[in-house]
View 1 (cartoon, rainbow, N blue to C red):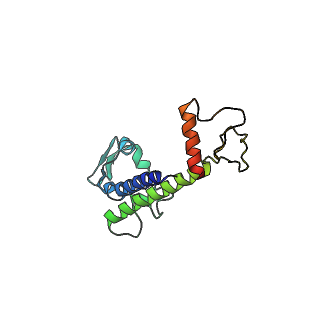
View 2: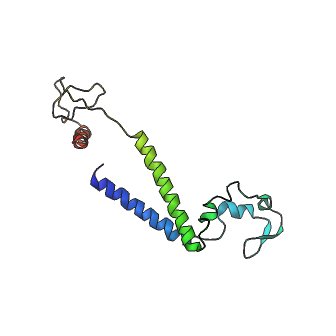
View 3: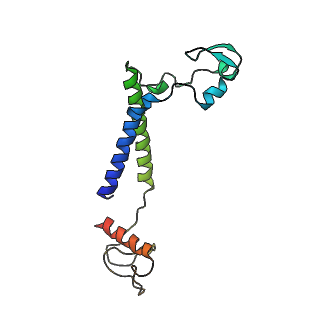
Length: 157
């Protein structure tokens, strides 16, 4: 990967960490679409506790992972709610990034470049500066093909 790509990737990760670590603390504390639709028919107090009526939210139970270290958008054991929410968001970004990067790493294209100067059989063009033996020049014609050839040559060096 070129240095420019690494800089773009690092910049994007830095912005995502900043948003998750700081801006997430300013998200609305009011229920969103699913939560508010489950509360229809009930009366709630200022703390969003059900005090009357009949609604689907009354049958809600705690999730099996309610005692996990990152439950309820915070980190268990951190008393400062601002820091707890920020750390939880940042950990979520890092875990998501690691899973995505690992998936891309596993699925990356692994082209084989012959070292004996012969034309590869997989339809790619040799990157050692030789031309194919069929008399065609890989850089003639389609500009996309010539860009691919140059990229492969840059990656091989």
